[in-house]
Length: 639
Image 1 (cartoon, rainbow, N blue to C red):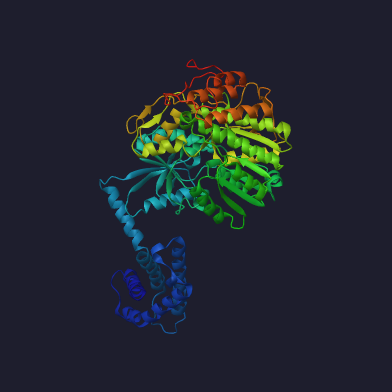
Image 2 (spheres, rainbow, N blue to C red; image 1 turned 90 degrees about the vertical axis):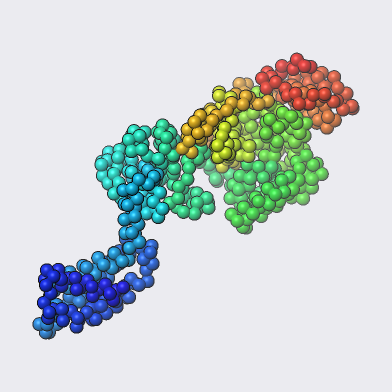
């Protein structure tokens, strides 16, 4: 192409110089010298690397390279012509104009694909073809790159209508040919005026409050809301293209600023120790394993009865920490023989007990499993921990253990009482950490809503006034590790969960984040409170006294156990376990759990005296659930 275009450029230069009437002797001089001129250009282009560029993906850098190469070639030709001894030479103005035309022609050819795409885009813009109208939030390098990418879309699916930015000096200016239309507060008006279909955040906001504010403004419009992946998504493999877009996730809005933890304290306690994590495949257990692996543990023991989950976790940890020693243990925390082998073989020094049955509606129908796993499993683990002289035992509890009205909550509350009672007779530091819902856990409301929205609805909400606390899994686990560093034994630590979130508002926001309309595109259906659920969760009892800790998001609670000593509480738990094993009526066992967690052991024993512990008690109607509004300690009228 250069062999053709360079002579053409000089011929056009002669034509322009003489207004189309080229003298014959100048044309003859051009014919005699054009071979040398072309050779000079080609040699310079070769040495400068013009022929080693993929011009299909050329950018401004390649354009500057081409301009420099053409300029250098033109200067060499200009010097050669000026020093030519004969008067039979090209005019210097023709040489200069020939160099300029050479750059224009070569640039046109090299960037022909982009020029064609621009012409095609203009043609599509002039036609009536429907395209998504995009409003970009923010003025930055990322915004400019995003606008260029959307404008170069080969399928011409997008039209960038402009930018919004909170810097008034930018208003009215243009970027990539598109105007800065106004500030972020004007987003609803601008979307209406320019009929925007999509709002894109060009940069992931560093401040979550700023993100919430922007999303709140955007949700006042019918436009879809998109955001560029942040660098953590890209490094974590969630996004291959750094310029790709994703939906704003509800986790982005629920999350708080990252909690700062003192890694030195955590490392001092954990490094060089054998650590056992029960329930290692659960949401909290798996994240505990991930974060513990960063503190140079001597050996990480991961115990769970989910064999497939252990395999997946093992693959993940080996990819992240290839040199970290760890063992996978398939087993159940209620298997005393298995626990004896684990404690005797590996001699763990710290235990994080995260294994539990946690799904409230399911446990309402199976209270015997709550007794077996959440109570008996905890007793076995703590007994072996005390017998082997462990340094620390950390019990992961829940906000549902406060004034519980569910089997799950009652069983976890009795577990708290037992762990606190163990501190009275053991040098091991027993610690309880209590917190609310975590975002993204299995069975969480967020993935449930997401699936329902993808299927077209309806989104099911139990009650319009239902509220819950939410915290991200990594933050919860980092605070657990930090709380362990503050423990002296016997404390209950409560994590600061922030403000309660109304589940109905959560559902509406998730629908709007998809660019859909509530009750038009997606219906919201109220299903009623399920057995064992409360409208509002609590994080502490009124009787528990609050104490500060060195971390602002961790509160130390002075536990109360209704003055139950370890032996009395152990006997009560063994009676409950025996009743569960022998098949006592579910309602009877359920009521016994509530009486036990309330400290009314006499009432519990009187209740159980109606059934012979040596004879299985059969209930005709096992499906009848206890009233979810049962007050603490109030006997069920059916008994």
